[in-house]
Every structure is written in structure tokens, then in C-alpha cells.
Image (cartoon, rainbow, N blue to C red; front, side):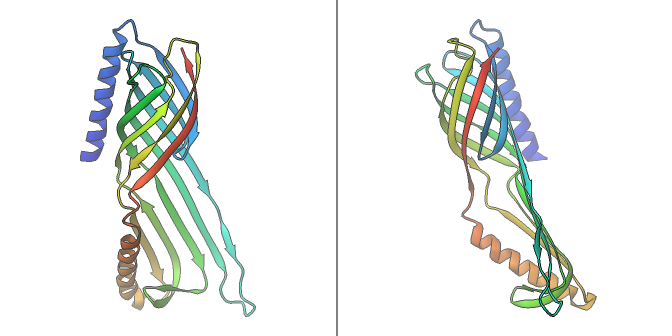
Length: 228
């Protein structure tokens, strides 16, 4: 809840800047549709001054796939694996145009709901922490910090007065923190569940140690804007 509160504070600050800009003769509003490494997105940009804009941002993408493993010749093994990637981010940003032209430096805060889910069904044994188990279900999840600071550069000023249509490009980094891994499974033999849980905990620790350096989500996007 504290992180959500910080994000809402960032939104309030941007909205305040927007309100300040709305009282100026320079104020203008533009909408942007874009695509990039955060998914398909939309921006609303409001001009505050010749060099400063406020921007609200939403991005979304979802992709899932079912992978089927055939049974062995003796009828053993087989099953399905279902990975699903969900990208969802909402950002409050300020864009500074130091030369009052297209080039911009952007900074802000994102509410980060990006995650990867995995479920599996198999009649084969699985190896967890170097021990083999027969399980009735198996799943996992990878997610990240719910609040993620952003810093980047780009080109394009959606509220420039020279025409209604503009193009934009952004490249930057979303600091999403080290991946947080969760795994779970149900042992076919209930007597082995406690040992399975202990091995899963060790496996999770090893995985998180391996991926702890992956704290940055690279952001690249292309967009087209319309000035209202």
C-alpha cells in the first residue's frame, strides 16, 4: 500500500503540473498511440511551458502458449506446459525539452504489474533441487517491484504547434528491481510434501541468486501523436 501511495503522489504531482499548464496560453493536449518493449501503449501529453510537458502513460501486452509434450513409447511422460507473459504498466512522467525542440529528457514513476506465469501438468517425474518427485500439479510466477522509476531520452513533442500530427521515439530504462520468483507443486504422495516444499524453497533461492542482476527493463518505443 505504501508503494501504491507513492505512485498516487507522483500522479498528483503530474496532475498539479498539468493544472498549472492548463491555466497558461501555452497549454495544449495531445494523444499518442505507440508500440514498444512495454507492449502497446497510449499517452496523454499536456504542455506546461515551451520546454516542459506532463505525460500520463498506459502500456499493455499479453501472450500465452500451450506446449504439449508427447508420451514416451511406454506410455509414460507427456503433459502440457502453459507459460503466459503479462505486461501492464501505468506511468506519470515529465518531459523536458531543453532546446524547446523535439529532443526530450524524461523521468517519472511507473506502477509496474509485469509478470510471467507458468503452469504445468505432467505424468512424468520432475527434478527439484536434485531430487525427483511425482507431482499432481506444478506452477510458478516471476514478478517485479510494484513501483519502478523511469529515466530516458527521446525525440518528439506531441504538443508542438506546427501541425496536428507528430512522431515520437523513446529509449530508456525502467528500474523494476530483481525478479521475484515463486514456485509451487503438490506431491502425488502427501508424505513427501514437506520435503518437496523445502526443496522448492532452495530451488527458488538458487534461481533468484542467478537472476538478481536483471533489475532493468529496457524501454524502446515508437509512436504517432495527434494534437487536439
